[in-house]
Length: 141
Image (cartoon, rainbow, N blue to C red; front, top):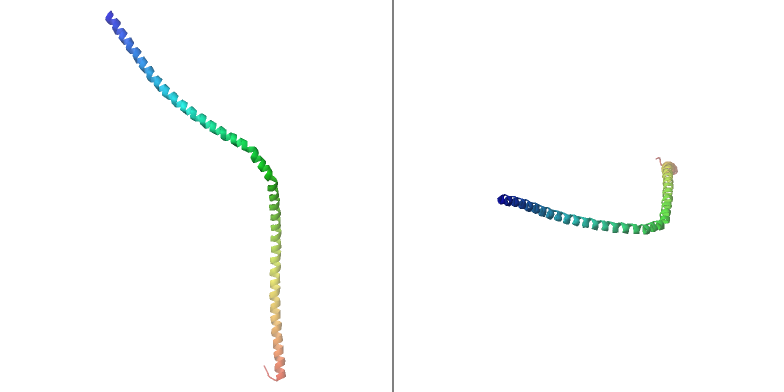
């Protein structure tokens, strides 16, 4: 019975040692996993702090940007009014240019006609004067 008791005790001790060994390995794995998770958590917290500080900086800059925009609003309105006026003036000038171009073409055509009439009259005058001179001189042309 002693042998049985010793064998039973040995088996129980081996089982206990195996449980302790498995427990130690699991604990070591859990410790390393905990360390990784803590590192990831710290990284995430650092990222969150950085984003929060960037957000706070943007929120702090909003009133300054709004103030500068409100300062620029009258200038923008004046510039828009000027642009509208300049567009209207350009439209008017283009219409005037078109009218003046048409008038120039009409005047050029009239000038061409007058030049042709003048040349015809000068030719007739020259022929008449030549005929009169030839008659005076007694020469036949």
